[in-house]
Length: 324
Image (cartoon, rainbow, N blue to C red; front, side):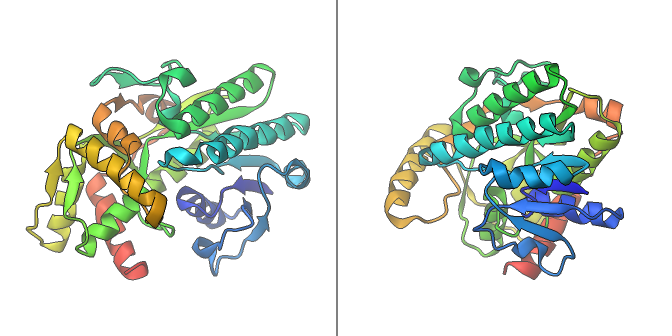
């Protein structure tokens, strides 16, 4: 039995289904409040428990052959820092402790945000230092702290491989994610403005495939970046325009204006609680223009991501069929 924490999320549900297609019977470990909509009609055992509850977690890790730890709080909201720290660092420590105790193989899904930030145009790879003080935002800092924990467990003998995806997009985004919401809002005609900036975006299915390849072929203690290519946000929107035969061009906000607007939206969110597409952290992320290399994963795992045009086309089709 393999255990997948966070198995109902965007990446998690895709990984669960891929394992089922390979003949595995994974057990999904998810938060008690999760509706598990992404796994409706999927024949899989679901355990609803908090990753911070070590007693429940121990029972399932003890019985597993391998653990895929995806569970995390992913948020661009600054006031969620305590939950982010508790789950992303504390929860990861619980998983690593128990995998060490019972000698279980661990595949830990981190993020490229764990790596120290570099100057614009510089390339981040697996040799880039991990220093929480040189990352931005509560999420990035939590992933950096957890990655350092994992590195220490690896030195102590834990059989662990760490996966660092770039910006995940693609179909099967049930909740949906920030990028999923951007595509959805644009398809509904509700998004008239986007921000200037770019990031390395990758298909959720390619990340899932890369995780399984790392499980099968990856080297103990290693980190693997799973990305695709750096692309401007307006280029993603242009792909949607091509698919839908639209000629609408949203207004593009420059860096300073985007920061100002994001602060106003944060203040508004304190009252309205509306889902935000824009925060100072997301503006910073899209305008850092750091590049990421997935050459190591390509060389050692045979990782080969699909063209982003295919990803955007499948995302549009899935959103229209499921969330509109």
